[in-house]
Amino acid sequence: MKRICITYRMQKGNETAETCHVLPMMDVVADNILREQENSQYIKSACAVSSVLEHLAYMQGYSYKGFICAELA
Image (cartoon, rainbow, N blue to C red; front, side):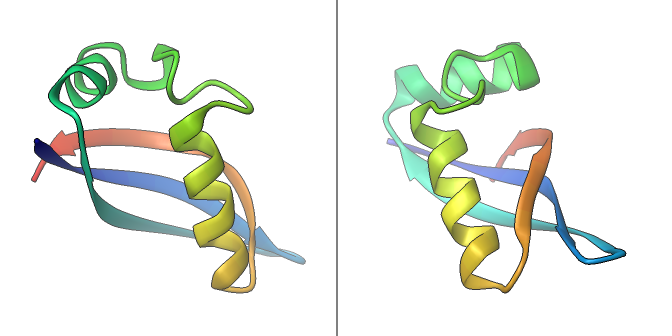
């Protein structure tokens, strides 16, 4: 299992913010995200990791506006 740090953009009204979270995931998923970045099948709209990011943004009072980058944590 690998841990990757994903940075993403959120918005609340006119305010835009960027934040990052370290997420543990299976090696095959992490490797795909690290290699493909925003083109990863796990980041594209309505996919597993994208859904997690949307929920994290919501819990912070924002709406999810998009993936920025991923790095090995």
